[in-house]
Length: 88
Image 1 (cartoon, rainbow, N blue to C red):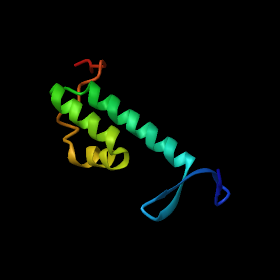
Image 2 (cartoon, rainbow, N blue to C red):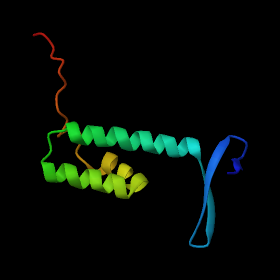
Image 3 (cartoon, one colour):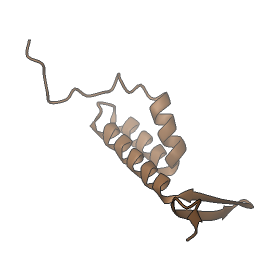
């Protein structure tokens, strides 16, 4: 593994005649955000097929699926209320 500008280890790959490197820290951040999005989807009150499609998109297209979920889904509409309720 190579050092990426002295910050940390990097994942380097050669794809379509393009050589690129991504810092490992960025890969971990993407993994954590994907996990949080999947947990939010599973806990929502969407239909099961909608849940499956969103999780499938996030798992297949990690970065673009995550961006699409946060910008294209109606998250407020399907947000399940938490266990905490205000006392009237």
